Length: 209
Image 1 (cartoon, rainbow, N blue to C red):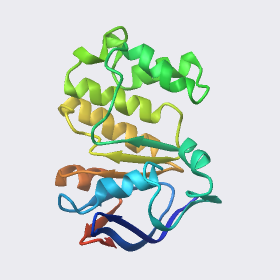
Image 2 (image 1 turned 120 degrees about the vertical axis):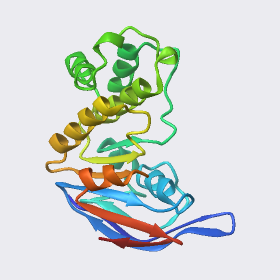
Image 3 (image 1 turned 90 degrees about the vertical axis):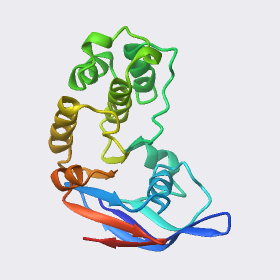
């Protein structure tokens, strides 16, 4: 299923952060969303994730319209915000099981996510004592846990060390088949190694390369 965005406009205060942008993303591709700070990258991802409701335009994913089928749209979406909010009082395994519960995920799948993102040694560690890199791993595991077909990742490699970055790159490579992945990054090497296409936001407009 394609993700189609038509004439999307979002105003914050008196400024048009997104000014009638249109684009189409197709499955099996990884797209990097680029732009200067304040260009609207995070705003666009929040709209696509159903976080913002006050915007104009049309967003569809297959037959689903984001405004009319928000919950169904979100069920097919995995979203990692730049802030990566987590429940710090929970243990890693407990938190992933909690998130999986929203999607009726079996315990075995939760354990698989623990292994896939290298969290085995921290299964029973409280999130609040984890390093930034491991917290990011937990956020990514939660994002992937329900096998979404549309992934929206805002600075997903933030805090990851070299080895963690390689695991993430392999996960993206393995996962992109028949899925759409849209991510932001300020690191040109990541953009070059991970993305098939780039979407560039500038002054509310968008260009695809």
